[in-house]
Picture (tube, rainbow, N blue to C red):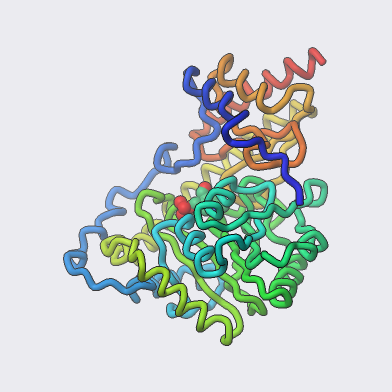
Length: 389
Ligand SMILES: Cc1ncc(COP(=O)(O)O)c(C=O)c1O
């Protein structure tokens, strides 16, 4: 198992300190869709005022009407899902917390992909669970290394995949998916498929992916999604877990998941009542976010054509672009310099645990003018180092 993550209390603080002092005019780390000038329909939140929200009649898995709306959402993505197999949570992060409680005893572990979303380690740790990284192949379209997974210790209870992955944008390859399902079934592991970006395939990428909820699973499988990404509303705090798998595993897992959810009842009634309307009207937001990502990605492709030393890793989906540059300057030094001298914020690759130096991660969400100028400054700064090397 491989990791080059810099301890949180060490190096990233240099970037955090520089960021506090810098005037950041070009924030290419912006991941909050509500702060990036994405247009939202004016009446999108009207359904939150549904007077039925005055009554409190909680259902630990979530109100039936909300779970049915999630099932309809799954159908849109090609997956036939029963509303009874859906459990709501306040966020995908909380969904992970529920699943780690469900699947692991303290001291046991889950396998998490690397490079990927850095929060897994923290989410697992606060549940007393270990997060053991497994490598996605940087030279092979970020395919899984199933041999490495085979060697995982006995303490493992589940594998997390992110489909498409943040920030590499890679979907789990269909062959890896079948092999992973078989491996999980054989080892008695659960499979957690984080599909929060599944709605955002990017044109010109290696292709889109099918939801894990769309195929039969030999292993107990949980697909995760939520309003945070699929409708660009992280502040509404509603996400979902869709469970699948052999009946002998599925029924007891759902009963225990209900027990966990019942201890919290964390999803507010108004947002549950509003969910069908939010998912319906939110299609416009999703389309606007997707357009924004496409426009910025096209601009990045055009700009990079004039900078052959810097390459864009082809993203399949999601809200990020990964740049590889000649590592004549370290990621941390470059990120600090960009903040202090250019007013540009970027994420260094080590933030996501990329295995090699010379990676920057840019959000595709910022407004196109800001993105284009920020990227030009990044490329000028890299060019100044490459020229001096
Ligand atoms: C892969 C992935 N999963 C989950 C989340 C968190 O989503 P939520 O706001 O629903 O907790 C993020 C947020 O960026 C993410 O990148």
